[in-house]
Length: 258
Image 1 (cartoon, one colour):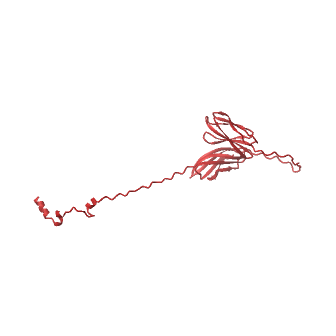
Image 2 (cartoon, rainbow, N blue to C red):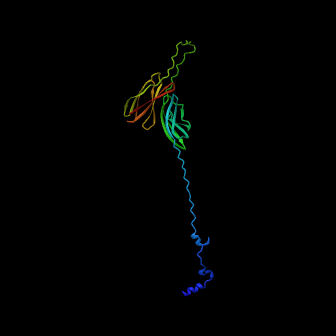
Image 3 (cartoon, rainbow, N blue to C red):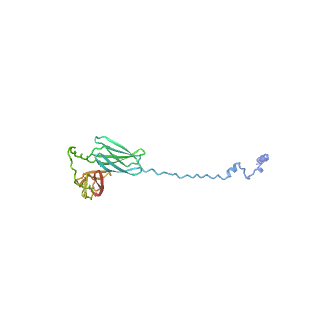
């Protein structure tokens, strides 16, 4: 203890314990650094992410036969949702060759020409969007029978007497009522009336169990037909069209259940 006190007394004045101070530390002293308040943490606010809703995928609707001529078919269709960039119509010609017709995305109808008369065609419609193909939607359509050639006229040397008969006024045919006359598990029998005029032929349109449109052609002198190959216990909407002078009349509709 005596030696310790002696050593303390021999220290330089600057290191003597009496010069020690616990006063305020300088800004650069370790004590000041330890006692200073911590800097507040900067809060980083995350901005909410914005998400754009995905564009809806376009969907093909129903393909409809608008008009049937001996050498052409006029078709129309719907896009139930979204818009397509383009469409492609495919069918097989009378020689069995696949034919393709491209249509712009803003067009919803087409006339397919250079067809065989009184011939049934399966037409397939595809839609294209962002390089993806959608479909197909199908329809079976039949061209009208070829009109008979006019009878040859008499030779120029023959003198023709002007006809004094008054031509009968042209009567435009009308469709009457369409009715279901019989049902079985896989068929529906239909009948209809024509209260005025005469049709060249009729078309029955309906959708099968898979939702694909079907077409049945009936001659103009008939007023009934049996649609077979149906699903049992299924509801069908039947649409009847009449055709006269290449003009379509109708439809009249009826709902039948197998």
